[in-house]
Length: 321
Ligand code: DP6
Image (cartoon, rainbow, N blue to C red; front, side, top):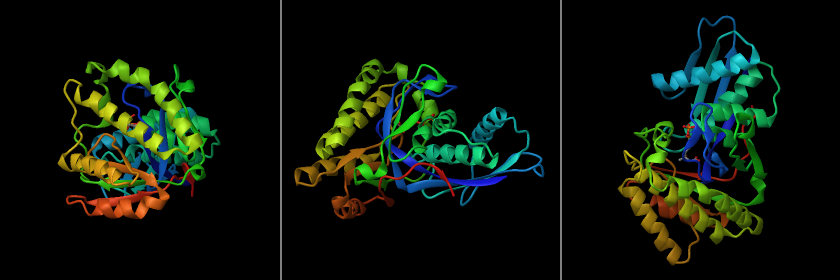
C-alpha cells in the first residue's frame, strides 16, 4: 500500500491571486505556469492498518501544527472519496526551502495527491488528480501536468482543472530562482488572498487576465522571448500592486528584492535579455533563455545578501517513482 511520488514546484507567469470559493479553492482567474526542474517535493504515502492515527513527517525539517492539519485534512478528503478507512504514514522531503514564496505547497500537495491515490491502488485521470491537488493548495494543480500548464477558471470544482498547454521541450527557458530570504513568509497566500477585494484595483486585474493569457500563448507560439518577458514582469507588478493596496496591505518584497529588480533593468539595458517575476515572498525568479543561464546565474550570485540560487529548466509534471 506504499507509493512515492515526486512533483515539481511551478512558477506562474500569469498568476492566481484571489479565490471565488475559499473552501474548494476555485480561483478568480485562470493562470499559466512553468514546472521547475530544480525545486521539487518527494512524498511517500503508506496506508496501513498498523497505524492508529495519521503520521506526517518532514525529512530535514518540521511541519507546524497548522501544516500538519492541512496535510491530514487533504488526505482525509482523498480517503473519503476512495472509501478507505485506514490511517497512513506520510513522509515528505523538499529539495528547496519551504514557505519562502517558492511554492512548496504546490509541489507538496501535488506529490501528496499522486502518492495517496497510487498507494490506495486507485487509478484516476490526470484531470481528476489536478482537481484534488487544487483542493489542497490552488497552485498545486499546475504541478501535475507536464511542462507549461494552464489552470482553468471554472464555475464549479469539476470545471477548474489544469492541463499542459506546451510540453517541457517546447521552449528551453530557464528560471534562475534567487533566494534572498529562506525563512517562512509572514502572511501565507491562503490568508493574504482572502483580502483581495479590499484593493481598489482587483476587478481591473481580474478582467485583464484573459488578454494576458492570450498574449502569453502568442509569445509561446512564436517563441518571442522579449514579448513573454514584458508580459510576465507587468503581470508580477500588477499582482503585487493589488497586494500592496489591500487592507491590511501586504508587502512581500524586501530591500534585496528591490535591488534585484533594479539590476535586472540595468542588465537588460546592457543587452542581456532577462526578466523577473515574484510570488508571495521576497525571492526573485529570473527568466532567461538557456543560452544566458550562466551569465544570469553569475550576476545573481554576485549580488550581496543573495542566499541561494537554484537553476530550473522546464520540467515534467508529478509522477510516481
Ligand atoms: C502568488 O496556490 O499558494 O504564488 O490555495 O491558498 O495554497 P493556496 O494558494 P497558492 O497561491 C499562489 C499564489 C501565487 C501566485 C500563483 O502561483 O499563481
